[in-house]
Length: 396
Image 1 (cartoon, rainbow, N blue to C red):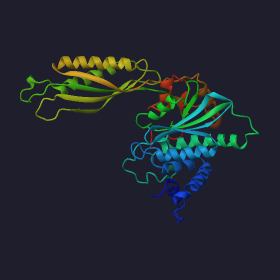
Image 2 (cartoon, helix red, strand yellow; image 1 turned 90 degrees about the vertical axis):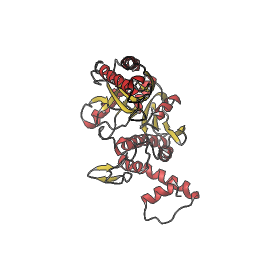
Image 3 (cartoon, rainbow, N blue to C red; image 1 turned 135 degrees about the vertical axis):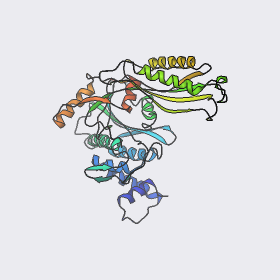
Image 4 (cartoon, rainbow, N blue to C red; image 1 turned 180 degrees about the vertical axis):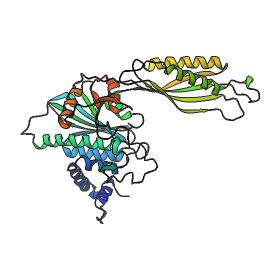
C-alpha cells in the first residue's frame, strides 16, 4: 500500500513512475509541506478536497496529519490531542506579546458523507464555471484553506523576520477540529484542554454568504419513550397502546411549541420529530414506542423550559391512553447564542470587511450550529462568530 506522501506525489505528478520506498517518505513529506505553503487559498482548497475526510467514513486522520505538517512548516508551534481513536484535533500557535486574548481561527476538518448523484469526482476538486467542485468545497475546505493561508502568512513572517519586526501584540492560534458534522466533540475537547479561553477572539470560516454571523438557535434533543401493555388487536381494551400514547404526546408538544415567544433576530423556536418506531406486529397492541425530538430554541426558551413542555405532554398522553407510561432523556443540549454588537471581534471584523469590500457588512444569524457556538456556550465567550467563503445554503 502506498503511503499518504506517495499518493499525494503521484496525484500531483501522474507522469512520475518511480514508487518511493517507506524510507523516502520523510523527504517527500518535507517537499510536500514546502509546496503546500506556496499555495494560495484556492489551490490549497483543491488539495484539501482531494483528501477525503467524510464523517462517518474516512474521518480526519489523513487531513489532520497534512494540516499538522503544514503548520509545522509555517514555523508555528504545534500540538495534537486525540479525542477518539484515530481522531485528533490539531493546533498551531504563533506566540505574541500576550497569550490572551488570542485570535483563534477554528475550523472543522470533517465533511458530511459523499452522498449520491455526483456528476463530477467528489474528491477531484475540478474547477468549472468559476467554481470548485467537490465534497466539502463549501463546508468547509475553502474556509479551512482561507484560515490556514492567513495563519501561515503571519507565522512565516514572524519566523523569517524575527529580528526585524515587532512581535505580534497578541497570540495567533489555529485549531482544526473533528466531529463537527456529528456531536462536535472536537470543539468541546479544545475547550476542555484549555486551548481556548473566555477572553479570546474566536472565528470560524464557515460559509456565510459574505455576512458576519454570530447568533445561533439553541439545539436541544430528546428521546421520548412510551411503554404500553401488549394485547391482541381484536381485544385492544386488554392492552395499553404505546403508539396511541406517543401520538397524543407528539401532538401536545407541537401545539405547545407553537405558542412559545419569538425572538427579534432568531425568529421562532421549532420542533422536529426525526425518527419514530414502535410495535412489532400489525395485529398486536404496541407495548413500546419511541420518537426523537429536535428542538431549535430561541430566547427566552431554553432546555429547562423545553423539559416542562415534554413532561406536560407525557402527562396528557398518559391520561388519554390509560396504562401507558412515558419517559424521556436529553440526548443533546446546546444553548442559544445571541449577537453582541459591542464585541471587540465584531467591531474589528466589521471594520476589516468594510475596508476590503467597501461596504458595511450584514450581520445575521447562523442557521445551524457551529464550533464557535459550542465555544460561546461552554465559556460564555461573547467574541465568537462565523465569517467565511461560500454560500451558507450550499453546504457541499
